[in-house]
Length: 206
Length: 174
Image (cartoon, rainbow over all chains, first blue to last red; front, top):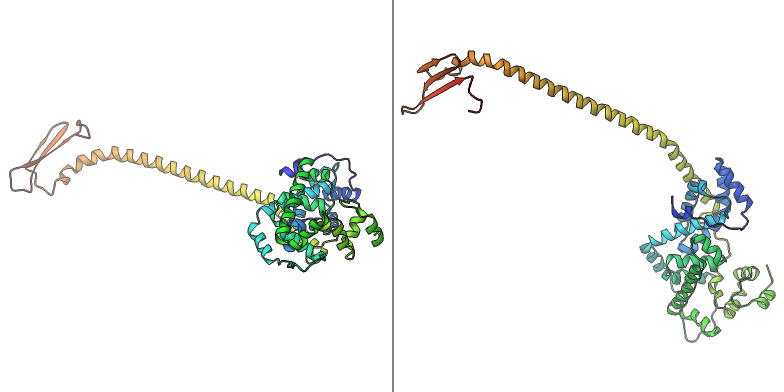
């Protein structure tokens, strides 16, 4: 049995009753309930996969793999724990495994990304476009380790607390904070190196 | 969602206020303002919006369910496959036992027949003694109770003669 399914940390958070009900129905052999659960969690799972992996097609494949693993291992889920924590743990484990095995493909993805803006001395103000942030993030985050990237995405984009991330990753909160600190530091370094026009924002603010 | 005015008034560096973050992630007009106030919001601005897999949710769910059904079919077929394996194993075991038995019987038969032929060969040998030497003229033959001595001429022109002794008492490797 995979380690991520064995180690579950108790939580007092209320488990979404609907999710729990669906899980019970699925365990009873209700395939329709599983379809409903997939439909309900698709956006959440895909968003996290996409942020961590940085490629839509790969994120889709990994998300599907997550749901297959969910189907196969649902009997190992303990309903006294938050379902989303369990699901996120599945997502992060599959996602991290994927990132670790994907160096060559990641390089290919990065080569397709263009420099979003070219810095000119004349530019005094920086106008930020949301789409550009996505591209900058994918390029800059490629220097992070899979775990750092996962922690960064969960903290910064999924707004999860350190304690929640620690439960998902099965590590201590201090480890999560450490990953987050290092990730931010590396991101700023890379931003300065690759996108000086954006790095200027930090200089101006401090 | 809170208004732009409220957002700009309440925005504090390092904010984790869900309503502020919600506005940050939705409002293009306030994006520059927010990042100028707190650059750490640069990447935080990415979260929040609903991301959907390529092809849409329906197609995604359908693909997942197809794979699930395929796995189910595989799982259902598994016991039968195990049965087949056992059947194959039983057939293989039967064949192996049959071959081993046949080999054993054949070996046994061979041993019996060789023993029989050995015991049968002696009288035959005795009777065929003169036949074995017919190609050469027998010069002289001496017979006793236990042995027979036969003297035949050699091919060479010398006087050397071949003497053959058939003696039941002598060891075989002599």
